[in-house]
Image (cartoon, rainbow, N blue to C red):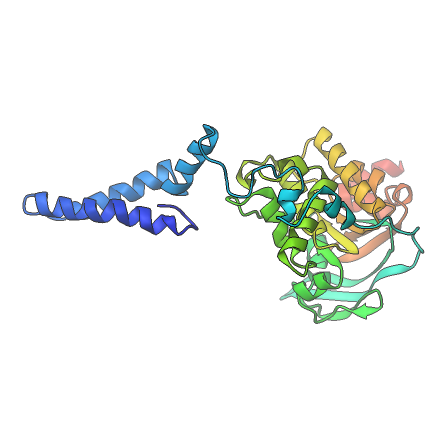
Length: 349
C-alpha cells in the first residue's frame, strides 16, 4: 500500500482482503491455496513495479500532472511558508547569523595524543592537531589513513582509547554526538542519508532542531541554511529527485541549520564533477565568511590546495605533516604516502 504512511496498510488491506476472500469463495474448492498465490503475485508485482507502494507512486503520478500539491509546499520560496503563519522574508532574514567579527586567531579545537585501536589495527596513533578559529583546516591522506575514524572520535561516535579533545576549552571526551552538536560542532557524512519522501526543507529541519527551541525557529533556521547553500528555490521539492550535487548541498544545509561554530565535512566533494566541485567550494568559502570554522576531509588534492588554510596529513593513523598547503604538498613523506616510494625516488632524482 505504501511505506511509511498510514494509508499503506489501509490500501493494502482494502485490496488484498476482499481479493483473497473472493478467490477463496469462488475458486477455493477447485484451486486450493489460490488466495496465497494471489498474495505472492501481488508482493512480486509491487517489489518490481512500485517498491515504495501504491500510495507513493499514485501521489507522484498526480503531482506530475498538476492534480495534487503536497501540503505545505505551496509558495515555499517566499519564506513565509517556510516559517509558518508567523513568518515572512524580513522575519527570516532577521534570524540569520550576524556578520562575524574578524577572527581572533585563537585556537577553537585542540586534539592531543588521540589514539584508537580496533583489535590489532591501530586506526589512530597519538594524533595531535589544532584548529584556528575562522580557518579552514584540510585533513588529507590516502585511503585507510584514519581520517573518518578521527572525525568519529571527535564527534562522539567513538570513544578514544587515549588522549584529550577540547573545544573552546571544554573537553569533548565522553560526550555523545548530540551533546557535541549542542556545543556547536556540526558534521556531514561520506554517505548522504535523506528522507526521500520528505521535502528538502523538511530534511533540513531535522538538523535545525539541534539548535532551535521550537518548530517555527527550526523552519526559519532550515530555510536560512538553504539560502546559504543555494537551494532555497527548491525548498519544496522531494529529496528523492535530487542530483548528487544537490544531495551534498542538502546535507551541508542540514549541518548548517544547527547553527554550528565549527563544521566538519567528510568528503563533501565525493562523486562530483569539476564544475560541481567549483560550485561547492564557493559555498564552503561563503560559509567560512559567515564565521564558521571548517574542518574538511577530502581526497581531491587539487581542490583542497585552493580551499584550505592549513593541512594535516594522516597516514596509517599518524600525523606525518602539518602546515600550509604549498609546503605540505612538497613534503617527501606526503608524496611517498600518496604515490609510493618509487615515485618519491623518481621525484628526488
